[in-house]
Image (tube, rainbow, N blue to C red; front, side, top):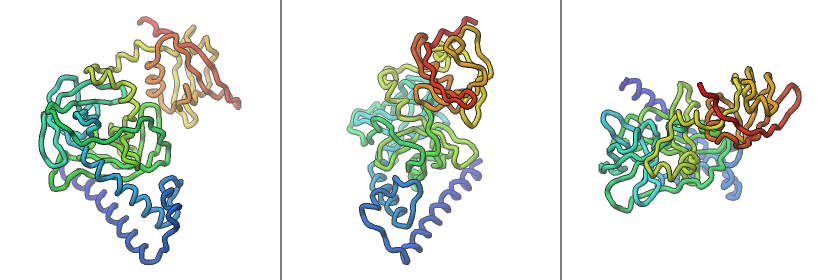
Length: 338
């Protein structure tokens, strides 16, 4: 396992090194564009020339020093993860599967290798959001959170973390990438994550935290992050040590549909008789594309969005019925007693 991990880390290093060599070679023969154009390079759909790549690199280099000061490693028992300090008094955002239950004692490893004690606070199993607080009183280095994440698919971003745990000689690892998909409950990027990165921060190129690393899959572009909104929306609950569990979704609203995932959205296969969907005009065969403006790409996402609302709360469903695009408003019902 240790050997495979090292190979994967070396693979990332080789890719980064090859990219930098390419940039260095191209510098000898490319004339750079105007400054105004370079400042917008990271907003382009695709970099058009070496000047665009250098502008993106400069933007990253400007954001990194401040970002790195606040990224930490978490140690608890035999496990390790990452986190990021977001307040001067030592609030640390991480993943719920890293922090665990409220009230646990954990160790925070600062960038210079110092270790300080912290206690876990609240979190959400649903979004994999967790929070800790450094016990020692001090003015801790911290980074800003995006007050409202207006990032979109294609935007550049960078991930920081401690894959494999804290290593003083190596330091934290930086990965530059782009947002591949954005959903209500997750951000997906091609910033390659490894074990130990969980709980670390995802930044926009302005150096603001837009997400926290949650999980990875086999492919290089399947790296998932809890969006910063999942923290901001539950900030007071987390600070009070409350944990949002999967069971709480069952107490929320109930739509009453059985679906399958398709390329266009969620196709309705079943309707619960007299449910909100049935009464509201949803038909078997309809394809649900969005609820309240949020795209619906997975059944898990549908469950989270509906379960996070109250019975009686109104939602707006965008769907396709045959060749027609329809919008339906309806009130959610209560989950039937089992």
